[in-house]
Length: 355
Image 1 (spheres, one colour):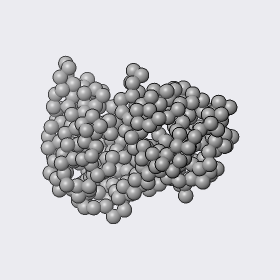
Image 2 (cartoon, one colour; image 1 turned 120 degrees about the horizontal axis):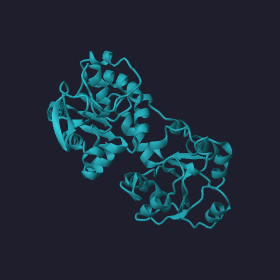
Image 3 (cartoon, rainbow, N blue to C red; image 1 turned 30 degrees about the vertical axis):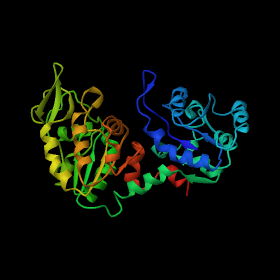
Image 4 (cartoon, rainbow, N blue to C red; image 1 turned 30 degrees about the horizontal axis):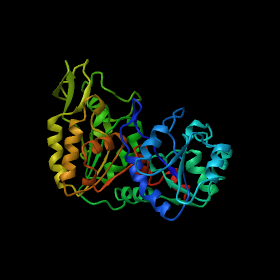
């Protein structure tokens, strides 16, 4: 069973186990069917051990950790498994065969099992051996969470409810172009925040100081003419340790934008109240530097609204977990980049491989 337990680790401690929790229904279902479950996942870019993740997993289910990916020790452990038992192998990316999409590596993994279950939506946009090759070597199935991801995210582009508000945050304008193009057509309003908004503020001819912007030049000005596009009118900047609210026309060259301003939040409130569908990906401020206040305010507004709400993006989910708001939304996606790519294209390499 391919899962995505690529959890955020700070100072050796895991700060969010949302993805483990979302994989549990599939694991427990298979246990009830007396399956012997081999969990495989990656962590980071490789070189790290999954031992800290294994300890968190064992808070929910009993799972033996094998500090190797393939080899005699793994084979022996799997052969000794009893029905209903769970083992988790070491970080897939510790073997170069994973990212290289190596067929020999995939064959060595496939020899361990009888069937393959994909419960790794957040990494299904990657052409990795465990994502696209294993389904060709074994009878393959989608996990419960993966099925939920496809069903719920598809609602955003298959006859979406109206009025439809799309909130887009985060950074990397280059990765968001297909989404912006698609949802300026499909949605009634597209609100852009986070570092992404800096590119638009700059395109408007205003100063963004030392704020993060995409270095690649794009023709952003063409989007400014679209009446569906909503941009921040004010932002929070840090000055002498204090957060100060400034209009986007007042930012100075030495300042850094950390968050949306109060008026920008107020401008969104009536749109949120009227919406019947809200799709949201990415944080609207640099929350790790104290710029998460507006994201939390808007999360609460969306949580109180009557709209169907679909929310995702790794950093956004961390804030949702902190605010204990997960149950207030219609659907919270486990995906970040995978969610963006699925919304843009309607499928992913890992999903195609199951077909």
